Length: 193
Image 1 (cartoon, rainbow, N blue to C red):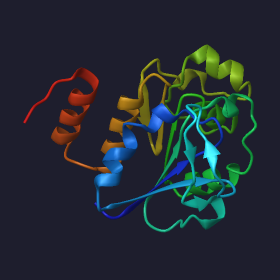
Image 2: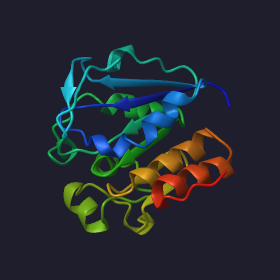
Image 3: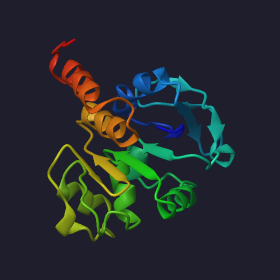
């Protein structure tokens, strides 16, 4: 595995639990360059009240090496109050870089047409249609916890563990067997050597 830049987008009110299983595992790997960013590089507060100072502003991101952009959910997506992320997402999409969206962040991808011709999921089909009336990917919608197709990973907001597993698999963080052991431990409390 070559070095991977993983950028996690933060904004006021982001759903902190949706990345809580993902980030500790990524932080352990020497082959992962994990960075948190906001649009302006200023401190934000998660929905749980966590005050976070990001590593970077969006303008400081390096687009070298393979990239995974992680978009956690939060009501700001539903309110369409997030501005300034569109160009980055379009650039990464056009370069076939991985974009991983969970919960309401999937509605952003639906609004922008990224889900129109790939298999995907969200919190619910009706929810996606309601929040993103521009969405046209009806026939590709899957009622699953997570779906990966091409370079887009989508997940509903009740599956942070499954979401993490999809990202680990995509970047080959560990062997398939070790990823599955991790999943069984955190999902089902099953410890195996």
